[in-house]
Image 1 (cartoon, rainbow, N blue to C red):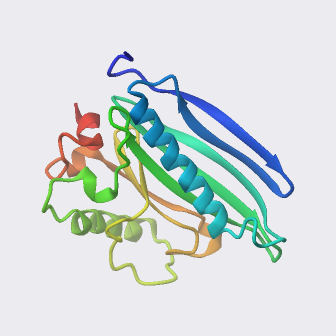
Image 2 (cartoon, helix red, strand yellow):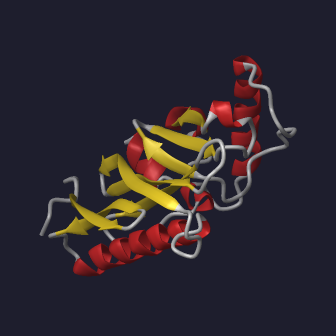
Length: 202
């Protein structure tokens, strides 16, 4: 049995095809196997969904480079991001990024709402923090920021919840992804102590 606090072993898989360079992770040699299987199934599903959304293989012009980044791999939490850059003509390609966060004990994939106590108004709290940050950073927005979506993109890194926005979601292409790291201590009162952010607190 793997020690509870041990990081999981990650293997990089590579797929090279015409107009596709893909690297994606899988969890290996992990117990319980049921958790390993659940995480790997979710990762493969997300990889394929991103490819499809970016037009591969249905668009013959779509040239895709896809890879991943590990963000957290400790305390029974695995958080990573899948990156997918697609060029299909025009001035520049487009990158999309998908965050996945798992319990390595059960294989459960967490949605943003799962990180907080039931009934806590996490949307309002996180939105207020981000609104203040947008003002400080003075980023010109394409649309008015009225708050995050309940299922806003996120990952966990360095005792922080990182909320992010896709390219063009809030600001012009030149600004790329907009990231908002929020310390777990700033939102301690609404965190579900048994969830992944609670584990970062201890």
